[in-house]
Image 1 (cartoon, rainbow, N blue to C red):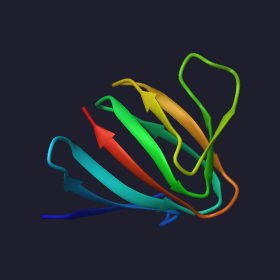
Image 2 (image 1 turned 90 degrees about the vertical axis):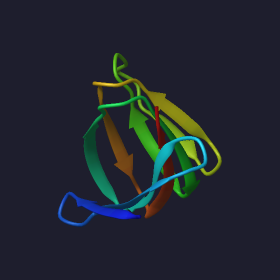
Image 3 (image 1 turned 135 degrees about the vertical axis):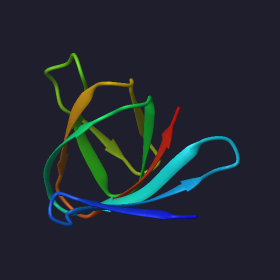
Image 4 (image 1 turned 180 degrees about the vertical axis):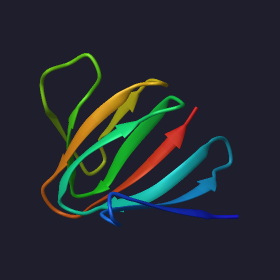
Length: 93
């Protein structure tokens, strides 16, 4: 069954589901800046739009566009800047 989540006063919304191999969520982010924490390793793939991300242990922002992905280990936090509404797919290990 699907599980729907909303964060940051509805500016981030996701639907959790189970793929054939891993748990996942697909979601959208409105324009803004957000900080997320992980409990599992996450692979986030941008579907549409772009995410500008500061990954743990770095001081540089990197922009990921549609079709690109990044990884964040478990028990980390990362920051995201979103210029235009962006869709993503996140898998969890």
